[in-house]
Length: 113
Length: 114
Image (cartoon, rainbow over all chains, first blue to last red; front, side, top):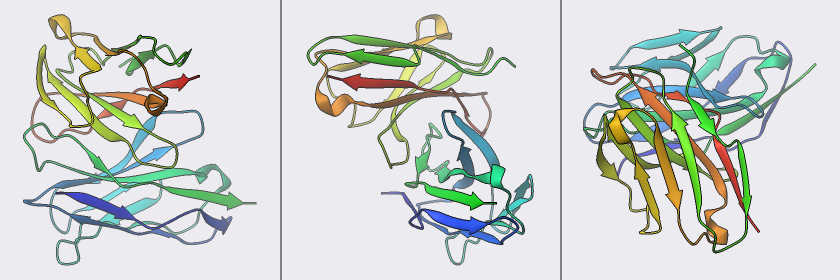
């Protein structure tokens, strides 16, 4: 079945460091891909999305490019802040008629001042 | 857009009791989803409603679980005869009709089984 694999966390970085969180997927058909962020005590918030190959999603300095050839959707940010500390989830959707999400296990990011 | 609302935020109950959670989606969102999230894991799909029709249920949804969405508005998720393994965060999400729209999530209901 369809699946999403994320890099293990936690990831600990100093403020202003470069961030990469790897995400690869296995899917039949052509899914849409999403990154969600979960801050402590809060629900999941959509960070960015891409709906077809070579699309780049971006928001709040974060970017991810839908790479069909490598089945990847890696999340990047050039300079992280303490406020970016959260859990990040990669997800795919659109391979079933209900558009349900299949999530990765999440990657915890901790940014130190 | 008032967001997806879930109640209660926390529920503590004894094993064997029944519990019910409520989700109020964003108004006019006709798609509604329930997910379950355990510690250190990503959310797992439980069930999906399109308006009032329940169109898909995961194998995770045993016969002790039932979900409804009367009149296509709010939804309830009931767990009967709770077990220790039911302890989790239960998330509700909604999205508008049309293609692969992003889902909007509530803050979840955390269930703890004593």
